[in-house]
Structures are given as structure tokens and as C-alpha cells.
Length: 400
Image: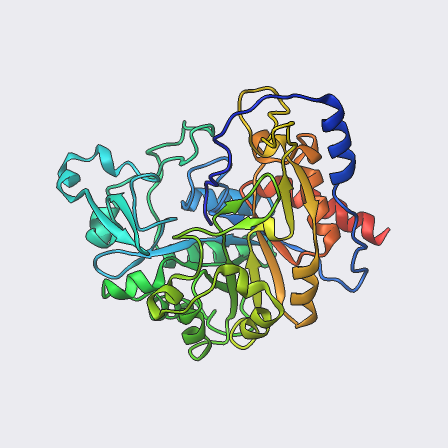
């Protein structure tokens, strides 16, 4: 999923305590009745592994997430030059590996378009697997522990499947994989399509079947439609957006995060938001088993505004970000999707205070509880231990 949202960079000042108190009262997250005992226990999906603690998309990170109780691990899949699927958040390796420190690869740095947007860096499609093996992963978030940088290799999808199945047997519980096909149209344009390679890897471990603990996800629609004709594995339609307008809480759309890239290539108009309308959900159910929108489609955030209509820096830290915003819930999309028989998952949950809406008072468990109470079927977290603890506490309360 996308790691950075662009509404946290502007500054303002607190102007009225009365304005603040009144807004807090008005915007406290609503309570939605739970679905009841028949509802299946929500899944906790380890977002890129235990990425809150270790460099993302490493065998060590996936193993840690499993130890922390995750039900599924999520590998983002990109291709090497020799058409091997490896786990990286993007084909651009510059932010998540030490490739820039390898002088032998310096000449491969370039600027290209990925899904219509310029990116500068080193791209997996220019490296063989043998060359990828010389790289090491690094933590992509500057505020997280950097002490494990350059210690872990970049794994292949086959290695991840082997790890998950081995850990499942050792622990005596079912653990699944939730691969994402990253930039599938772009990969096809490079002559390196992802879909058949993914299914072949699942075939090789006996998991290319409807009952397997597998979900395949994509922000694009065309490759999910193609996969539907190729496999009975469960498919999930990801739904992105650019940002939230902190003044209104409205979802905003701007390229390249405005629509599925296959829509752009096909000349189809519209935005990701069209996929979560009743008509859009009807369309999704023809080829996918569920839908996985960004969490702001279910619980948006709104700023306190000063007298001139500018967002207020409530915390006084000189920044305006989620920690200053009130969470506002709306379960319409979730209910509409579930009424159509679609599973509903959402992303991404993180524990750092600046990434938690002010409504949660710095407690990640409160955010999880809000989504579990709403009736979400599963969620992606960087911190599987926190998510599992919150899920289990919710489930125990629901059934006692």
C-alpha cells in the first residue's frame, strides 16, 4: 500500500480553545452496532511483514509477523530482469534496499515513468536474481529502527511460500499469503507479466485453489479480471486515493493515485471512488471476492479550523497531521459491500502517534476497536502484535 499521504506538510496556529472543545464533541467517532456472534473473526494481515519492527518484505520480517500472531503475510510482488518474482513494495529499489551503495550498479540509476509518473532510481526489471541477491533490505521509515539495515536479503515469492508453509506446520495453525501484483500493466509493458508466474508458484505448493489460504490483490482491475479466468484463488480489489481534504474530510483524487492505471491506459474515465459506489461494487463482485479500500473510506479525518478556515495545530508541535485530526466514521461502503457478499478488508494501521487520529488519544487499540466494531472483515497492520491483541480483546468482549 502507499506509505505517504500528502496532507501533513502545512503549518498553522491554535486560535480558540472553545472552537477546539466544540469540534471534539461534534466529531467523536460514532458507535456502530457489531455484527454479532455469526460474524467471522476479523483477519490480521501483516503489512509487508513485521514492517513496524524490521525492514519490510524480508523472510525475517514475515517470520516475526507470524510469531506476533498474524493470520496472513503480505508480499508485494515485482519482477526481476530474468522474470523471477521477488518481494519489494515497488520495482524501484532505491528506498528499500542498499542498491545506491553498490558502485557496480551506479550506471543503472535512471528516470522512467511508472504508471505515468516519473520515478528516479534503480529498477528490479534491470537486475537478474543473482544481482538482487547481492542487495540487502533497509527500513523505509526514518523514524523506525534502522539497526537491521543491510542484514537481510530480498526474498523470492517461492521462498516466502516455503516459509509460510513451514511455519504453519511448526505452529499448528493456518497461516496464509496475500500477494499484491504491483503495477501489473507496467510489468506487462516491460515484457514481464506477473500473473502466470504467481499462479505457477502457487501451483507448485498446492495453493492454486479456492480453499487455499491465499488472497491475490491489485489496485488495477484488468489483471484481476484476467486472473478470475485463470484461478479460483480469492481476489481482492484494492481501492486507493490521493489524500483527504483535512478541512472537510472528503477523499481527494490526483494522478497517479486517482484511478486504476489500466483505466488510464484504456481511456476509461472516473476515479477509484467509482469502485465503492453501489454500481461499482456490483461491477467488482463480477470478478473479485472482496474489496479493500484505504481506511479513510470508512473513517475519515477532519481538522479543527481557526477563524480564517485554516487547520489548527492542536498538539502545538509545529505540524498539522493526523494527530491533530478527529476521526469521523461512516459505514455505508462497508455495509453496501457486505450486502453484496463481498469481503471487506482495509489498510494500513500504524502505531506511531503522528499516524493516529487525535480521537484515539495515542492508543492504537482504539483505532482497531473502531474498525472491528464497525464490522470489518480484515485489516493490514505494520504491527501485528498490537492488531492481534486488539482483535482478540474485541472478540472476547463480543462473545462474553
